[in-house]
Length: 425
Image 1 (cartoon, rainbow, N blue to C red):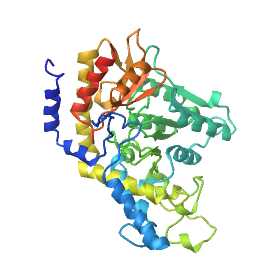
Image 2 (image 1 turned 90 degrees about the vertical axis):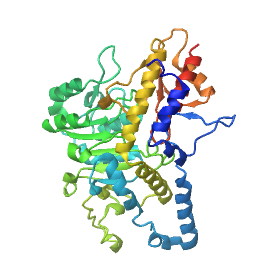
Image 3 (image 1 turned 60 degrees about the vertical axis):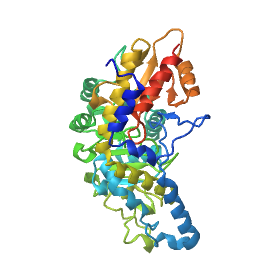
Image 4 (image 1 turned 120 degrees about the vertical axis):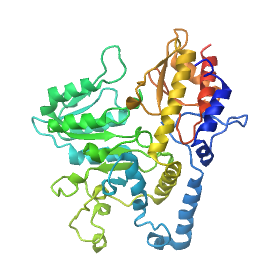
């Protein structure tokens, strides 16, 4: 530990890192002086892979040369383009190929999923979410409850940390499910909590929910591309995620969705339908009788934006080149642990880490608060940003930093802590 805080040690760790070369596959933003930014904001927007421009230009050229014929011509015809993303997307979330599809945006997908999987009755109408849910999730849940004619004050069941704690305890979640399970129609929680960076025990939560007759879904915005998952084996009913954080597909890019295969053949399951979810063999007969595909694709409503899908294909190919989610997780554990060790060694009195230390309960992100009475978190955030660090601040008092294994280095972690130390003076 005595030699931990040194540039030489960080550079030595980078030399030993089998994924260090992946940094060269990304465009790293520059400071005004020409140096690389210390970019630790992949939990909010991932950096651009260098191949993204190539993939986008290819589709622009296809459109330029072929017009409408591009739907059926070229190496990546537009008509089935979303299928080119299926295999690698499925690997990221531990699903069968038939269980995933790239479509819509994250909150839109959550709404579409709740159309099918939130089926409230007079006695079973509650939705369990966490008290400090990402606002868009909270709004979506509240609006769905109102849409069905129920009162959110009565039908929203909020899971809260214990007094004086910041993160949720699995046993408390399980107790809530056991106590209120007969009233809960849907459990919808994050895979990784956006504010604290806590990884929830999705497998155990799903088992507990199903034992009480509840549907169970997850928002995987901060989980996909961050931690390995096994949604199929865990028997999760549905999940949705964005692709612009750890998957680096660009701002506002098309989202992903998972629907367990056990639901694919249920023709009685309500859904908002559109022609892109109709059986492929008869879609262009233009008949007005909806025949859903026997896959997650059945929840599609419209043909997707190809340029956004091309950016996702570039990001998925970059992840594949790195060795997939298991290789990324192996480096992530080392890199985030190194950053945590530096913070605890150098700034244990000044900085508190909200994110659990247990590997099973944490991913890339560390959520930090400032303990000093003379300085608040926003002031410190402004100082480190001015010094060349890009991370983000979440009210009321959290600085979120995420060393991403695809492009962040051990040297990034060292330099961040050095700048943070100076900013706390």
